[in-house]
Amino acid sequence: MTNDLVFTDVVKRFGDFTAVHKLNLTIREGEFFSFLGPSGCGKTTILRMISGFIEPTAGDIRLGGRSLRGLGPNIRPTALIFQNLALFPLMTVEQNIGFGLEVRGMPAQERRRRIDAMLDLIALPGYAKRRIDELSGGQKQRVAIARALAVEPEVLLLDEPLSALDLKLRQHMRAELRAIQQRTGVTFVYITHDQGEALAMSDRVAVMSHGRVEQVDVSAEVYNNPQTAFVASFVGENNLFPGRVVGVSNGEAQVDTAFGRLVGVNTRRLQVGDEAYLVVRPERLRLQPPAGGDCNTVASKVLGEVFEGVLVTVTLANPMGPPITLTMSNDGDVPTLTEHSPINVHFAPSHARVLPKTGLASD
Image 1 (cartoon, rainbow, N blue to C red):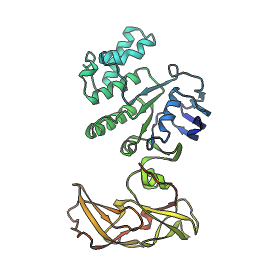
Image 2: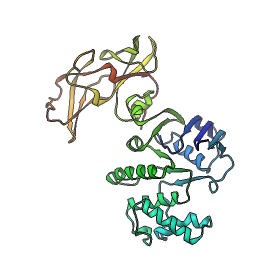
Image 3: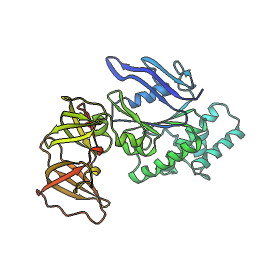
Image 4: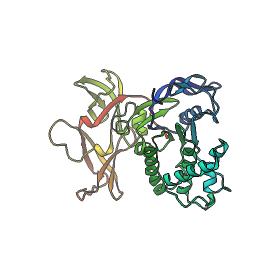
C-alpha cells in the first residue's frame, strides 16, 4: 500500500461555524501538494487536522491506510514548519536541527551524522556552530526545513513559511524548497495564499473557498482551465464577461454580454438560459484578429497604458464591471495607444471558458 494521505468526508466545525465542508481528497505519496486560497478559506484548519493539533468533527484522515484519529502531534509521522519558523534563538544551528532527535533519544554519534547530512541537504555546511540570530532570513528558512526533515517525517507540513521574506528571496526559496522536496521524496503539504508560490512549486494545487475545495489539478490546468468563477478570479488575472447562454454546440457556448455575443469553451456543459461568466486571460487578448478561424471581438475604448518593462498592460472601458485588461509582451512592436481612443480587441473561442455565474474572489 502506498503512503498516501487520504481525507474521507472530513468536516471541521467550531460551534455553529463550519470551517471545512466534507473534504474528500487524496494527496499522493511523495507529492508536493498545495492548498491555495484567501484568508479564512479553511486551508490552515486542514493543516492543523493533519498535524493533530485539532481533530475532525466528522470523517477520517488516513496515512498509508492508518487512521490518524487519536494520535497526538508528538507521535504522528508528520512535522510542521510554522509561519514564524519557531526556531530557538539562543541555540546554535546544530542544536536546533538536532533538538527533535535528542528528544527522541537518538545516540549522540548518530545524531551528529544526521545533523551533518541535513546541513549538506540545505547547503549550509560549516554553519553548525552559528547562532540563529546570526543567520539571514533565507538561512533561517533552511534551518527550519532541516530541523523538520531530521526526524524523518512521512509528511512535512508547511504553513506559509515564505510569507515574511522579501520578493527576491521568496522566489529563490521557492526553488530551494522544490529542490529539497525532490531530493528527499518526502510528501510536502504546503499552505499559501500566494498563487505564484503554489503554481511554481506544486505537483498539484487545491484551490479553496469558504471551506470547500473548488478545484484540484496540476498548476497549468488550474490556470488555463479554471472550473469555477472563483478559481478564474482568484488564480491570476482574468477578464470576466457576465451574460446568459443563448446557444450550445460542439463543446462551445454562446453568451450574450454587454459587448455582444461571445463564444467560449463550454467546460461545465451549461445549457441555454443559464447565467454565466465568459472568462479570458489578459495575455490571450490581441489587437489584431487571430489568423484563420472564428474569433471574438470586443469594441471598447482605451483607458490607459502601463509600461512594466517586460510587459505592457492596457486597460479598456467596461460599462458592466472592472476595466478589461490586455497584456502584451514588450517585443518591440507594441503600438502607442491614445487615451479614450476607440479600440477593438480579439480572442479565439478556444482561449475563453464559459463558467456558471457563481461567487468571485474578493481578496
